[in-house]
Structures are given as structure tokens and as C-alpha cells.
Image (cartoon, rainbow, N blue to C red; front, side, top):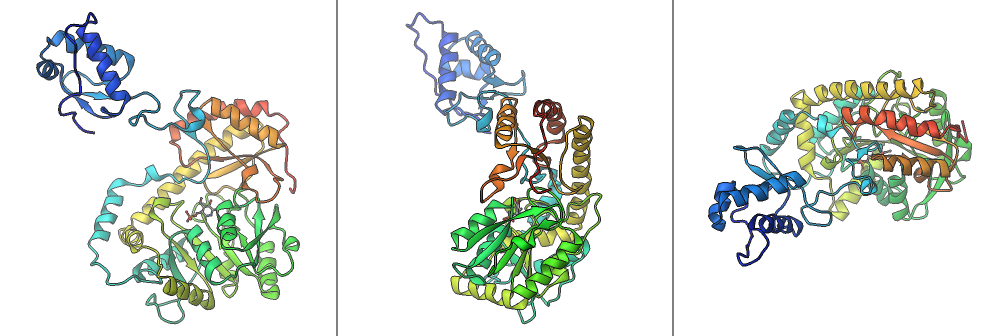
Length: 473
Ligand SMILES: Cc1ncc(COP(=O)(O)O)c(C=O)c1O
């Protein structure tokens, strides 16, 4: 917000148009072309009258008009501010594209974004201040900041039941590496451990950013269907070099890979030479479901475990971790060395501080409580309305299956008209879509927005009465 030093206004005293009307027109035009921006403080009516050499009645009348039109806001004594500007002007706040016609504030119910506004701001500031106190490093730490990797080891033990070894000094036997997030880690694996032309089996539907990242690196991605137990192992093609999956909370369907399928998967991986990439994107967010052993604890020799702070803090931090067998760690470190790339240390220091102050633990408890309550609201409403949904009591989204692409498309369009942004399942396939429906995320919006959107969502879903569409169980 800034105060406009001298308003860019000229008045024509010879014109038959009253001065107050001219002034209002000038101010509207200034907001329209960006000379005035949303949040700019306007001078008082008295100061502006002095500047323009007009009576205060003129400035007061112009402000009153603009106030009535919603261009400015403010009370006597506390300042007057520009609040809005026409679409297309530099000061216009971007709205969600889909809702422009509806002219309502969009409620974003797409999955993916975390509850970033739930991060305690003093804890966040404390962590950044602490991170800023660290002496500048003379060179990048290829494996990641040792204190960060130690904090990750502690986090994995406490929240994921995974015990990892290492001195975190970059020597032999390291198994934990810092990454710039899961997608960045996939790119590193594709460039270091895997080779162009290697076949990678991925869950279908699945996480398309990983798919695109692998394809961009020249890997051959083969979609493999999932059933209620997880990835269908018999559909993994012969000669596959790796299998990418999200066993804790299959993305986007939200179900856990069963214990039996996990054991079978790592057995097959050992027998057939697959490297298993375990995407544990939101494994910390589990409410009423028992934890199952991570693939990385069942078979640390063939599993690369990827974690991220994107769902528990913010993707803007760009911080994650990899736990991998020694040859994979060595290959990734070698790749970082020859390409001169390593994940930025700044975000790692922030996580170290959050963990050291106990703020990470407090935030995780608060996050779980909040998201489990939001999920409860949504589940109660859907159950009460007889709407079938999928997904374990975990994570930050659930899935409402539908019968067809047409139904999915219609529902998303209708929701858009009511200011609700939804995500469809069809786009989470890399082959022809077999699952249709919507994935409803409940972390990115506020609790009030979610509460207000639920009746609309139910009424839209009740129109999709023929709701059942689950191709593989
Ligand atoms: C399935 C899945 N994996 C991983 C991630 C996180 O990726 P990153 O750490 O690159 O932000 C996401 C984020 O949306 C996701 O949905």
C-alpha cells in the first residue's frame, strides 16, 4: 500500500461538466490505467481540495460517488483507499479464470495445495530469523545440510516409522539426501540412476507431474491400473526398470496399498530388478487409519523413498528428502557434482529451525486436527446426502467417482458457475482415462469457504444421480 503523493488529476474549469463529476471521472480513469492501484491511499478531501484549488464540497462529492460505486473505501479519519479497478487494468486483482463470468470469489477445492495460511506466522518468522543467523556456507552441500538431514531422519522415525542410518557428513553409508522436492528428485533419478529409454511403470490414474518429468528425461512411461489393493503388479511390463507409486495415499484416488500388495511389490522388485520409487507426498496426514510399513522399511535395498514439505508446509519452500540405497545415493551425488546442482540450503535451514524450536511438531498436530475436522465435515455431508466417495481417512482430499467424462465435465462447469473450482479425475491419466469423478481438496480454502461450498457441492452432485463409475474396484 502506498500513499499517492500528488494525484494525477487535471480539471477543466471551462467545461460544463461539474468539477465533482470531472474529478470522479479522472480518478476512475487513473485506477483504470494503473496510475492508481488497489490499496493506494488517497489524500483527504481537504488535502485534495487544496492541491486542486477547489472547494472541499467538490472533493467530498467525488469521493462519495466513487465510494458508492465501490472504487474506494475508508472511513472518516482512517484514510481512504482504492479498493478495486476494472478488469484488465494493472491494478485489477486476478480472479480464478473460471469464475469471471460468475463474478464471485472462487473457492478452490482442487487438491494439491496445502493449508499454508495455517502456519503460525511467529513460528515462521522465528524459523527464518534463525536460518538467517547461519554463517554463509563457503560451498554448496551436495547431500544437503547435515542438520537438515538429521532433522529429516528424526521426522521419518517419529512420523513414518522409518529408521535411517548415516552421519550426515557426506561420507560413506549415507542414505538420506536433501532434495528440492519430490518432482525435482524424480528428475534427478531420471537423469542419474535411470537411462533414456528405460521403462517406468506408473500408477494409472497417478501423479502427472512425475509422469511429465520422466517423459521429459526420455524415459518410457507405462500406465498400470490400480485396484482396491494398489498397483496391479501383473500389469507391470516385462523389462520395466522402475515402478513409481504412492502407497500411503494413492494419488489421486486416496486409498492405501494393502500390506499384502506391499510385500508382493518388493518381492517382485527384488526378483525382476525394479527400482521402486515410493512417493510419500502426504504420509504425515493420517487421521483414523493405521499406518502400514513404508516400502522403504520393507526393502531399503530396492526402494527410493521420496518425501516433501509441500503438503505440510508450503511448496514454495522447495524442500524435500530422498532415502535411497547406497548405489542410488552415490549416483545422485555424482550427478549433482558433475552438473553443479544441489538443492538450495535456505529452505533446509528453515526446516531445521522449525524442528529445533518444536514448531514443526506443533504445526503437524494442528494441521492434522484441522484437516481431519474439515474432512469430517465433508464426509458427514456426503454421507448424509447418500453420495459415494473414495479415499482413506487421511490426506487433504477425497474422491467422488462419476460414470463418464461427460458427467465429470458438466459437474466441473456447473461448479465453476457457482464459484467453486473443482478438479476432475480424467486429467490424472497418462493413457486414455478410465476413472471419472472429482477430487475434492479441503486444505487450500478456508474452513468457512469449505462450509459455505458444501451445500452447493451437494446440490450439484445430487444432479449427477447416476454416480457410480469405478472401472477397477
Ligand atoms: C502425488 C504427489 N506427489 C508429490 C507432490 C509434491 O511434489 P513437490 O515436492 O515437487 O512439490 C505432489 C504435489 O502436488 C503430489 O500431488
